[in-house]
Length: 337
Image 1 (cartoon, rainbow, N blue to C red):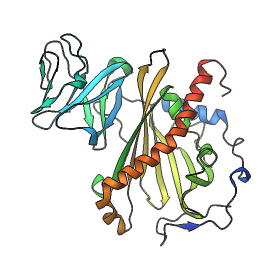
Image 2 (tube, rainbow, N blue to C red; image 1 turned 90 degrees about the vertical axis):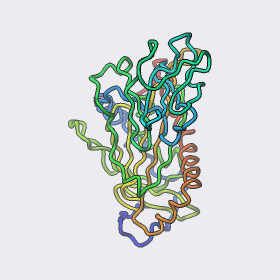
Image 3 (cartoon, rainbow, N blue to C red; image 1 turned 30 degrees about the vertical axis):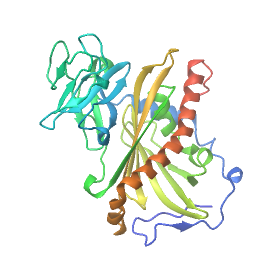
């Protein structure tokens, strides 16, 4: 079935598939999914500057009584809000005797080590040095210059999003045995969508790919339908771009939810107990709609966030297996790409 061209002002967001195609009868995409195209797109992404900024977690996970903790390339970090509402961040290892600061409570904006009571208010103390931190309203970032090794930037490269006051945001986090490039490569292979995720996507066609001779913001353009129920689908046109070496953004260019974005951020965590690399996928979905009913739907934000997070989790259970397989083949010299 040829996907009808979606239109952002269509009266109804849903479409009815006239002739559903069985999974095994759909058009093969392996010829179009050329390894060289994906590899070149990955190379361009890795050449872009990150300014040494890494996503730690979701803004909504910042609490008043405990820090937001994470690991970046083997470095423990903690983030919390000080008494005046500012963000503070720094190493997650107490400089006194190595206690995990992630386990310490926050009292009136002060992070207190639960081993011996070292109090951190966000400034340097007893050998503990703060790290640059940024809250973009959806995600929390920290800058680790010793990890990134790039020219530092004063703030992370945050993709353009719809206004948060008019949208709904949800954040999913998962961990895989792979490296960030394997996560990014997965997202730069849109051809696998209808084959690998038939429960979510149908009628997928890649209608545009980046120019191999250009290093600009051109990305992959995809016409695809999101499955709702039975033959009901939501057809859209989406564009995949890479604003940074560990970030892939999917933006709805046409169709229902025009302007909505799905940001996939890959943060290296460090090796596991056997020395295999671990990477966290932090995916932010920022959804918007011009339809009058969307404002009412936002009133049910807590429920919708759980649904959005569960949907992302189902996709990433498959996609992390894809990324882990890619890393396994690369690490053993068997990857054909």
